[in-house]
Length: 632
Ligand code: ADP
Image (cartoon, rainbow, N blue to C red):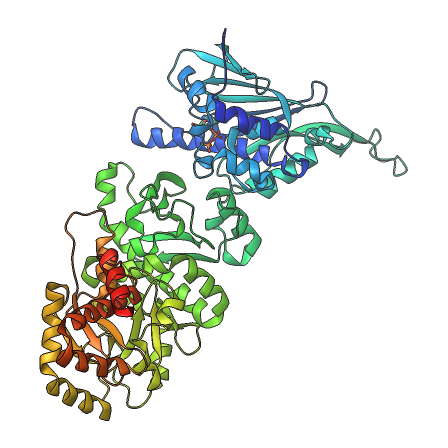
């Protein structure tokens, strides 16, 4: 017999399980049954891909046995079983448990109440048992093994005597305490209720011998006065309905059923924000159950996140994450697809390129969009909650592949607007546009507060036009790809031509021609820092601002340069001067009297424009010196 210690993370989780609060303890049964069902799935899948194995459905089941005298619950399955290595790997270390991958044990400790809502796996046995024994024999192996543990000290592994393939788990229930009556779990009714509550959809029969009573045959058939006597007998009963939830009729299901299934299967503690239960009987028939989570998973914006739906072939799980079923923009969707039309005997590679998958994916893509649009029109608050979690994938979806999916996604976009400071869709924006307004205006910056203060915003806002505030790095990139919405082009408030005619504009043009030398001097002073220095037609009260020419805006420059990439880009910067501001008079004076001072002024003005844009000052020491000299 070998004695081993648990890995340290496992120990911590075990401690937590052992000391968990009572109301959550019942989920141990769900966890063990779902492991058993997975083990039979693996067996079934093996049989489907290996002709030498025959799979007779009758041979596959999960059995629960209650022993009141010895206070044990035994759960047996005829699944694939575990080898000695499997027992060590799977039950000796918590890291193996997929359910906990996304939460560190530390986080869980902080909120132990969350436990009941997670798939915590095999370790949950220790919530109700002080000793757990696992007898297992792997399919095809000669040897059986016995794993045993009484909690945090460690476990032992020994040769076992199980003669058929599969796994048997024996739980020795903890002693009852004042507040906790573990004997509850030895009650047939209680177990039946738990199976119904959590595991009804499991595809294999969950059997249990249950006691029943029936009237005894009468001693004298003709004696009407003879009292009926009853006798107890044992009968094998299947406790679960065995119909997976996605195969049930919508009318049979309540929100709670959908939500419970989601939380258990996809390890979320929050109900989903939307459920899509759909089927298609076209060329490729399938059923799908999709969930839109209420929040992004912790690792959603990391490389580790893998999108995809579970893929079932006629009820058997054949792929845990089939990425081809979901476009990246909807990569946050969880769920499953079940189709009897997918051939199983083809390898994964082939399956991944299956035409049928494309048909299903297209159908689902439309469904997801439809669901989101419905939500947008029927429950704005909910949609905004969704959007706050998942605006990024939608915006990236527009930008990706040169806008291939832009038409699918553009109606789902929302931005905060200048007037109401609330989220509006593009179609809402367009419907609010003024009669003489040519463009959809936007302004970008780090935060709404900062964008609002941008000098460039002034003229457009003064005209009474609404402005979309872009505060996410992907915004401008997405909008550039989109180019227009309902025939209206997008225009940055920093664009050289704002499409706003005004009398002032002519005035500015005049002043620029009159002071050609001044602008040229300033431009020469700044050298290659700017492409041009111009009289501004957009500034009203502010003295200067920086705008850009061409496709690349200053915000985009910032985004691109923040990426881990050696080649840096630079937007074509234009320094705009407000010719109606007192500073302009000062500049024209200096042009005549003190060119050296004008140089310093130019540098200070340019640098303050950089700061307004949220760019860093190229030479802060020089700036400081210049300011001092100008003051002095
Ligand atoms: P999870 O099921 O989330 O992976 P568990 O801690 O419940 O985490 O189980 C760990 C692993 O142990 C499973 O992934 C599976 O490989 C194995 N296992 C657990 N129970 C059984 C069983 N009844 N039959 C075969 N393998 C099992």
